[in-house]
Length: 153
Image 1 (cartoon, rainbow, N blue to C red):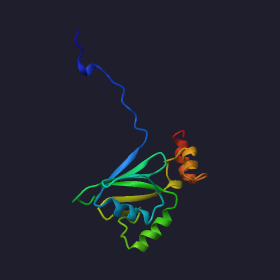
Image 2: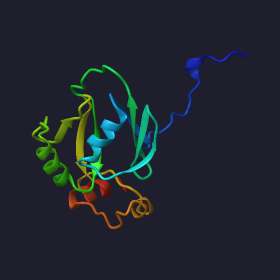
Image 3: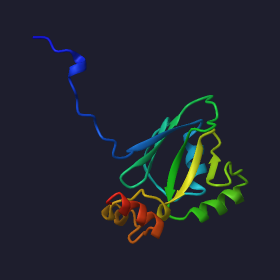
Image 4: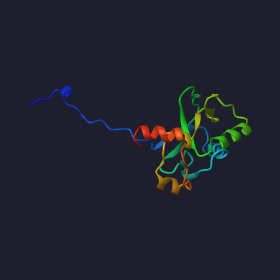
């Protein structure tokens, strides 16, 4: 008995989060120094060609690569507990902010970063993860809580 492939259906996987984002950088130590100027983080692991910045139950992977083009629109949103602190430091570092609406800027290797405030978005860490990160009680704005409630979360 043969079965036509178009007649078969398969359950699709549901996207439920991001484990990590990988960024290409020219120098691992320089990248860690750059990100360390405006972020407090734990280093999960490091080698000559890779480094992993711990984000609780997620991580940011930095991988050594040469001669990569600058990202024009491709970017990632990095969630922080204090967006204004990042803005002040980025200003002090003399880094140009790309977007007036968002806190977007480029790292020295052309990766476009959007800084997002934890309290103002739907993204939520489990309480045990927040406690483990030393962020117990980190809250949400009323607008973010409303967006979550509208989704039954």
